[in-house]
Length: 324
Figure 1 (cartoon, helix red, strand yellow):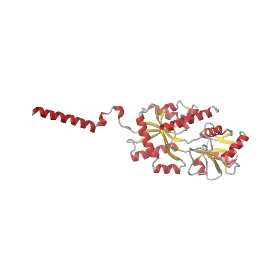
Figure 2 (figure 1 turned 180 degrees about the vertical axis):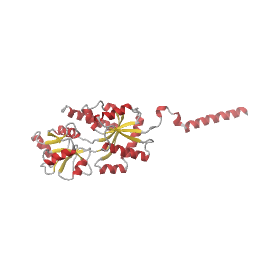
Figure 3 (figure 1 turned 90 degrees about the horizontal axis):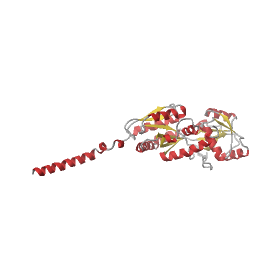
């Protein structure tokens, strides 16, 4: 009888132990497999507060916290200066565990192409793109050029026969130069370091063509004619403006909201961040905000985002070689 009771007790202990293992399985996982995140996530923005990159980071972080798509909040830290180097250095000082990431855009690639900072694509693991905003090329509304092909034809017959307002080394310079290289023409540059400068020169007749953000163009309302849009697809608010790719030129500048982690960040942490960001950009309120700000909301997974960026960096390096 005593032996039988011992047997029952032993089996009960084993059963209890097994039950405990199942019910507290998370407690016996290896330390490296602990649930992510375990602390607030710092999002480093390489610009001052108030710009598009900063606004998008804050909107998506709020939406993620509001819906509990991550178990910890996301805190925005602005680290402007040094062509992005200040932000990258702050990232480098942090642990590479997914709790410190960067929200940037493709201005980062121009910095890399121009060797403006001690960083490159190898420093990062791509989490993904959450939409973006593309510019367009415009002429005056009374210009003789009704289409982009009209302009290309003229410039091929009259090399450097039109004046383009740009800031050397800026996004307008690089985007225009990529298209000019692809289409086989040249313009003549006049320095304009801001959208306001480009608009003033174009409307005043000291420039023939200039690049503007789609939001700048729509805000102007009159006096301009858009010839080509640099987005991956037509902008719904400007349905009659073709993309460069539609016209046969493999050039696009989506300037996406790019989320980046340190290169050694665990894949599991990146996957959790990506999942939350993908849900956020699909949220109806976020989609409406993007549309109202002439931006396009979409999700591009990390690997595809990196592949697209690598290809674009090659194009930018070719342009940089002509101005360095």
